[in-house]
Length: 120
Image (tube, rainbow, N blue to C red; front, side, top):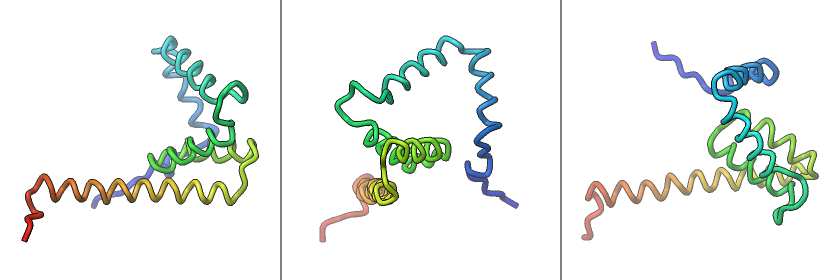
């Protein structure tokens, strides 16, 4: 019997953070640089794209990659930055359209690579 597990089944907002200790122990230098990079990307001021829109972009990417942690964090941060429920909904639809568009485009690539699409 095959069991399908999805990331959300493993999601525990509080306990999962404790596993950062593995990064801290084994790759503290990389973790420090990643944290600094992330902080720079999401700093409130000093960027051309307002933080609300950067958070909505991050949410769309999280939805596209199906990262429950990103969806959790960036949906909350987007709301905190002034996004509305309507903006969250439209962000989800944009991510959905892009993901579906990728499937459509890759389908065409399958026809091209397989030689299945012969002109008649």
